[in-house]
Length: 161
Image (tube, rainbow, N blue to C red):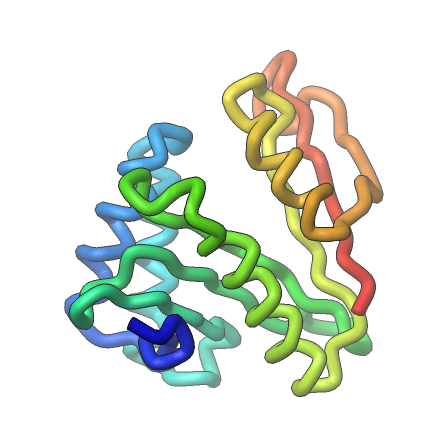
């Protein structure tokens, strides 16, 4: 199957359950964080692009197995947030994440974006995530000590486009 034939940008009602499954399968997130990922889909379905949330899905047989959620940052000129990027655990290590990130970068650039900002945790479980961002050409821009909890810093990366 040609990878380009399975990308789509418009969320569907069934995607909420698929995103819950994708994010939960990673083993990285608390239940309340998974709920937030699903809420963003619901918000986009309710408000369309006025929600500020853009999505990119990689779908197997119409069911997403990887996705990204991103959007422009209010009160900035060309800065965008990457809220979520995840592949189902069964699809990890197949290059989907890097391809998804490249597609997000291309779409943000086409919208006049100049930088993508990403935040993640400093917990050890997120080491592969931090390595992924570095491998995608992101640089660490800030670290906020004990942001999420004692001993759990917020690490902010930026990808200049």
